[in-house]
Image (cartoon, rainbow, N blue to C red):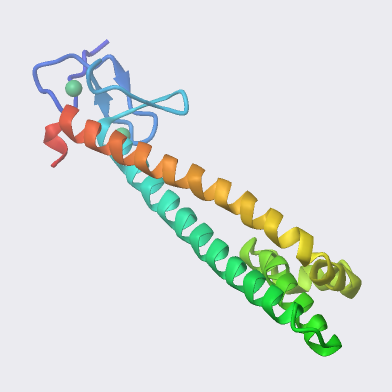
Length: 167
Ligand SMILES: [Zn+2]
Ligand SMILES: [Zn+2]
């Protein structure tokens, strides 16, 4: 069988083939991604995709937490004004981020309606309890996404250092 040389090092024998693009790669060029052996170039693409995914996720959690917090705080302020009308509007405001969650998940408001309008009413009424829980849940997701992002950025820096020919 013909000996193949590494796609990135003409003086080295390939010991594996990139499962993504099929390039022959030497031991030093073999990167691992989800138990697959891939080449440095495909590895770089995967890391960059992860960075963009984590950035998008992190930003969506930041928006959710800030918007939900604003609705919740304003809702409480209105709620405590002492009239029945404002009491109800306050409850509504506190519950709105809870309903917004369905948009955020991409399920769409129609999916919510198919589950019954009463679900939306429950979502709004229990927003007073559910919204702070959702804020905490999304804060936790935000921390994880930020952690994933900084890990991926470190991976990219290491990758660029290990494989300078990618630049
Ligand atoms: Zn490849
Ligand atoms: Zn190589």
